[in-house]
Image (cartoon, rainbow, N blue to C red):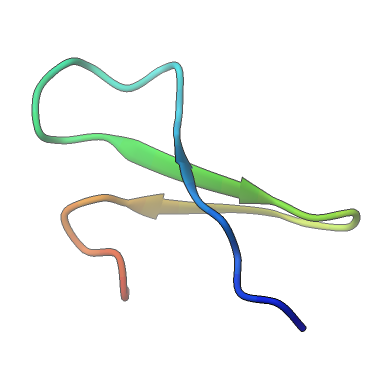
Length: 38
């Protein structure tokens, strides 16, 4: 399986804090940019 390709959500603010999302055919993954590894 290929690693997820995250992008910044359009709902994120312009500050450093943002939500990143990655999608596949079956899932949507969400993470906090401050803690990308969990």
